[in-house]
Every structure is written in C-alpha cells, then in structure tokens.
Image 1 (tube, rainbow, N blue to C red):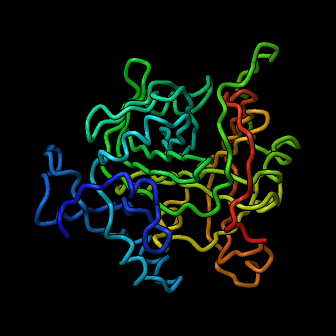
Image 2: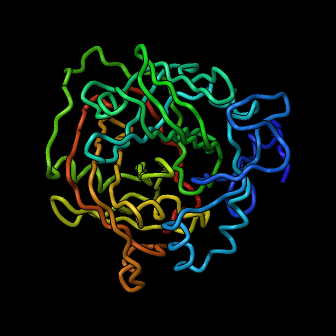
Length: 350
C-alpha cells in the first residue's frame, strides 16, 4: 500500500469498513510501505500509510473473539503523522482526553480543555496542547519527563474522533506531543453533546482535587448515572492508548467500594484496549459529569471476563471488564466547559 494524502471528505465521513475511519488504526510495531516519506522526515506527499503489526495481547484477544481476519483488514490504514485534512479538525476542538503513566506504572486518563486553537499542529509530527489540566491532576507530575502519551480528541456533536499516540512532555506550561500513530476510529456509542463555552464560575466555591482509595457515595452515584467514560491503557513497548466507552445510563455497574464492571460492546475488532489489558492490567478511567463539571479519575487493575452467562446481565455485552480501584482523584471543577446534551447514540444497546 502506498503513501496517501487524505481529503476533507474523508474527515467529514469518518467512516470506513468495520466502523473505522479513513485514518485507520494504531500500530504498536510499524512496517513501512515501499513509497512515502521516511519516518522522522517530512515531504509534500502526505503521511505514510503503515501496515498494522498487532502485539501479542491484541492477537490473543482477537483470536479468542474469532475476529482475526476482520482485525487484519481494518489494521492496514494508520498514518504516521497528522494528515493535512485533520489539522482544521484539531484546531476546532475544545477538549482532549490524555493517557499518561505515573512513576509507579499506574495509568491515568485526564481531560484538558481550552478555547478553539488550544490544540495546534506545529508540524506533521508535533502537536501542541496550550493548556494544562486542573490542579491536582496526575498528568502534571507524570509529564514532567517525557513518556508514553495517547490523545483521544472527540467532536461530541458530530460525533467523530481522532486518536493520536506517541510521546509527550510538559514544556513551558504546555504539553508537547510527538506523534507516532494517528487514526480515526469507531463513532459508535458516543452520546451527542454541544460544548457551549466555559461555565460560569463566578459563584462557585473553589474546591481542590481530593484523593482516596475507595468510592464514596457521591462517586458511586456519578458512575451509575454516567453514559460516557474514557479509558487509558498501556503496553510497555507499544505505548499508551486512550479510548471511549459509552452506553445508556447504568451501563457501568458498581459492585463494591473498590470494584466496578462495564460491558465491552461490538466495535472495530482491533481490541487495542483489551489487548493492552491482556499484557498489562493497569488502566485509568475518567468519568466526566457534564452537567456539573465534576471529574472522577480512577486508576487500578482491569481484567476481562469472557463468561457468556455473565455477559447476558449487561445489555449488548460481548464480554465484561472488571476494574479494581487502587486510587481515586475527584475534582468538583475538573471540567470547566458547559455542555448541553442532545441525544444518546443510536448504537447504544437498549
């Protein structure tokens, strides 16, 4: 497959094959095609399309799920830098979810917001995030030195999204990310919301982030009412991944003060999240309460339950993921944007 440039129409449709967009999917190990610019360089010919080489965890999950052929087909479309047609999309966004890893190897998912333009492409490999997350967010410590980073950049109103994996670091009060894999992927299960600007905080009481190791009644309620959360995982060699999970309220179940479970629905068959978990159980979850702006960040260990009888307890589930909480960061003011709900995804299982 030769190097290719991508047009605006492909950005707009964001739909290719088995719910994959034109950018394709991530490649922990990459193999160059015969044509296109060399890695690390730049040419006027557009991004190089790369051939997916799944790691052993992804292959194991794909094989057990019986989707190896589908995964091979959809895994051919990643690019190794930010396509020209994606730059305007990034410039218009007001939020990005970021996966980072702390010094203990714990994985965290964070949200960073800003005015349109806070995300900018400095060159085809270098993305600048011009703001930082709220005080107390683990990202602030995690990216003092360069490390694995994954970005999940959604348009909640369309809905559509871009994912970008690579390495990043905080420099001069900004987050600088160096892209290795850029791709769009499945739009399913995204609840449609409009981001209307920054919420009025004139009468708000400033509350700092709090840390705990067990879910409080307030935390449990937030999780049970959620229709959306974000999940961060990492493969020690292939790098970090940030993804999205969505469903009707109640799709995530709280089974104890340190234990939650959620369904894994039919998706793109690459199994980047579950493949990472098959190798490294460390994961980070981020719940955003869009009405109030409260964020809940959980880090802990996740495991996959393939029992079909248990999956029947979760509408539409093909398998279940259990998550054991190790640490919690709650911030009443973690998401400063005002969001208005439009509608649930038509793909949500009833």
